[in-house]
Image 1 (tube, one colour):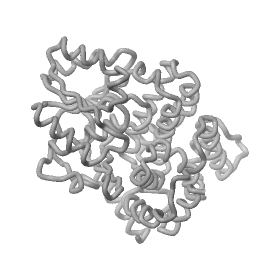
Image 2 (cartoon, rainbow, N blue to C red):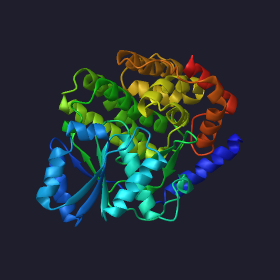
Image 3 (cartoon, rainbow, N blue to C red):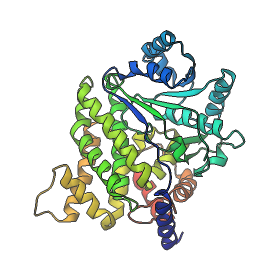
Amino acid sequence: MNPLYCRTYQFAYKTVAHFLSWRHPLLLEGENSLAELPDLLHRQSIQNVLIVTDQGISELGLMDSLLEGFTNSGIQYTVYDKTLPNPTIDTIEDALSLYKSSRCEGIIAFGGGSPIDCAKGVAARVAQPGKTLAQMKGQLKVRKAIPPLVAIPTTAGTGSETTIVAVVSNSETHEKYAINDPVLTPHFAVMDPLLIVNLPKHITSTTGMDALTHAVEAYIGRSNTPQTRQWSREAVKLIFENLYETYQNGNNSKARAKMQRASFLAGRAFTRAYVGYIHAIAHTLGGFYNVPHGLANAVIMPHVLEYYGDAAHKPLAELADLVGITHLSDSEEVKCNKFIKAIKLMNEKMDIPETISSIENKDIPIMVERAYHEANPLYPVPRILNKKDLETLYILIKA
């Protein structure tokens, strides 16, 4: 794909984005903020909701206090807890059937990125009953108001509680794609750090690196605004200061709250400034091998940042200065390399591998095609890569 065409497309989309209606969710924040949700829904006259979650959350009892609050407030609820990692079309359609049969008026996503993606998929289908999920793939294909949507993240990584994105997997073709539309932004979000104090270490680490990927890809891309730069910078600083602490000391609710804020800010940043080849490649690994998205991003990120070369030196050098790992005498290239090295060190300290061994050579050609067409012409990356570049990256990630 011609790089000039890609850049022209990206400029046009950035221009159009300026005129779109961007919703920012009403936030309930802080310890025990979850308890405020029943009253909020009652004030909004929402009396019957579908709760989209997964079996792990149901079995842990994380929703028990919320369900009790709904009962006390006279709010009816139906629970769909069959969401799997990388939610599929079938999963979303099952949840949609339950939404309709229960005559629900709103949707609550309770969990990590997968339940929130599933809930957004349901919301898109409610808004556009005549369209399949595949027909809404890509940009601005929903375009109609969704039912009231509440996101309650139980990880600090995806930022889905503030993004316009729903990521869907096709279990038959192994394709993983995004539906992007500002109408998919949740109306309300609950960021209660007590929900994530007992998050397992491996989920803390990979979801935290997912948030870092969002912030970094947004910052180094070419569709930034002063506001997205600010959000990205604050997110990167919070992650460098708090991620390893939450990994080591999961009960530190203050650090957990700061990671929630970092995830939220990074989500806001990439919603406007977009992501890049890290995500395009990660989506293929999720589709083919069910690699958790945060883990894929964490492994891929250093490889792609190095591959960009001098096209990314300046913004990565700025981030290196921001987190205090540089000297005044360092060149941009040295600062950039220090930042990438710091990412590798964080991965190593949190037992995140350097490569993904499950990649099979026979799958690389089709994954290259899918990553290439996801990223180009939309993603405003520092350097436009061709299919040969992407093939090289898959081999590096597999090595």
